[in-house]
Amino acid sequence: MNRQELVQLIRDRRSYLCIGLDTDIHKIPKHLLSHPDPMFAFNKAIIDATKDLCVAYKINTAFYECQGIRGWESLQRTVEYIPKEIFTIADAKRGDIGNTSSYYAKTFYETYGFDSVTVAPYMGHDSVQPFLGFPEKWAIVLGLTSNVGSADFQMQPLKDEKLYEKVIRTCASWGSPDNMMFVVGATQADVVADIRKIVPDHFFLVPGVGAQGGSLKDISEKGMNKEAGLLVNASRAVIYAGNDERFADDAHAAALQLQKEMAGYL
Amino acid sequence: MNRQELVQLIRDRRSYLCIGLDTDIHKIPKHLLSHPDPMFAFNKAIIDATKDLCVAYKINTAFYECQGIRGWESLQRTVEYIPKEIFTIADAKRGDIGNTSSYYAKTFYETYGFDSVTVAPYMGHDSVQPFLGFPEKWAIVLGLTSNVGSADFQMQPLKDEKLYEKVIRTCASWGSPDNMMFVVGATQADVVADIRKIVPDHFFLVPGVGAQGGSLKDISEKGMNKEAGLLVNASRAVIYAGNDERFADDAHAAALQLQKEMAGYL
Image 1 (cartoon, rainbow over the protein chains, first blue to last red):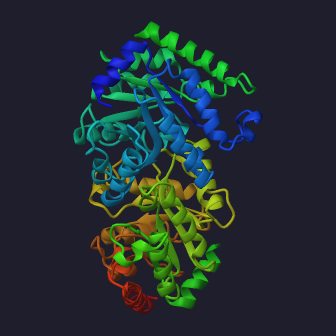
Image 2: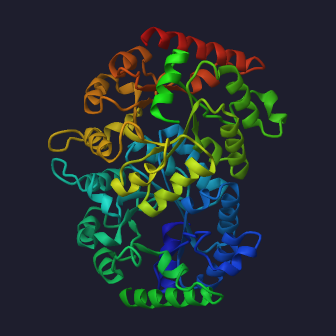
Image 3: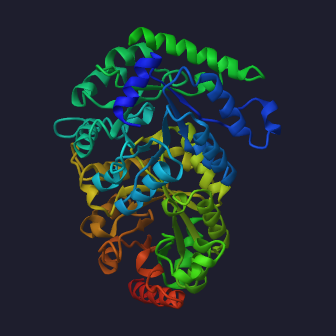
């Protein structure tokens, strides 16, 4: 999916909601466990209930990988089930030497057909660039993450700026707003306005609203640009809004509340 | 595997060779392609030919992931086939918020049974610590990597030290030499002696010998400690030493040459 299509989708739906399918076999409603593929059954119901309210689904690969091969089967079924007009994110946080990164890019863009993959920047340009050479595919580079550990290294001061600023500024020079986004945690709203100055045109993927404590209002006011420029993710707050046979209705209600709030900010 | 066992293995075999199973379906000898699982058939032959010369096998997950589910099947068969007395490394470079990192730890330590997994440190302590709570399992944290992109961020100066020094010093305080190692690229031999001063007792996993240009002699002289403290990886230089029906014999010869050189440094 290209940027123009993504921006149009956001305008049409009056939403920049990304729903995170952090599907934990131990947390899904018990009645699904008799299904041959419980994780997919859960995701299918969540997608059916929310696909008109969001513009992206983010699949956190760890939750699938830990189930071994059957987890990857659930992941594959899920990404194939997501309607083609919705942006898909493999939240995999990959990154390695160039030769290896190119295999990760192929994995998520081609083998599974995602629109994008999250990328860890620590190894530098030759670890990031292999994710940039695919038309209408996106590398979503970790900038400033939502967790407390972001203080350990990302916040460290270099000569003129903090590490995360250096990372965002430098990575932006390797790609463009058409093939790169940045992860900017919602718990870091106080610095989002400054990051927006560094990369005025890039999309931000914003985790951390809901369970992690970030404010949708703050991040929207401080991070939005003229094209919206935000994909705000909610995972647990939507997919585990309920935990019984009405879980999909509860997820719909939670997503609808977020979408309505977003419509107000757009 | 615990540290004492690993050190004993190195002494017994007079080797600190790690063989990287970077198995590329497009590079393995053509006669294997008729096998129902060509990647595993290749790995099985390499393991049979080299298992008495090395102390570790490192599986670069990207090469398997890009093949989709059948790649994970090849990976699983391979790790199950590796003799139990040999140290196993999932070179997966994972790292995410704590909740997610704990799923990655389970994936590689429990679902697939690896002894260790490589971990990207950018997200800080809550992304690394979930990899440390498993008895006789190891997080191998990226310190200073072998690729040219290591200059982009890892080499950046902070107030008193470079970022990679801060990363190594800080991460070392979260674990111990019994549950943490560091990736230190062989192409960085000039600074390995300095890193050894920061973490005198930790093992280093050293990629970059061979195809990437690092010198085994340099890294051994500058990085070794009293327990050896090194796992030096060779991937392409061993597994693709030959490319016909004698490929396993060629891999044996390449591994033997490295082992003999290592015996001289021990």
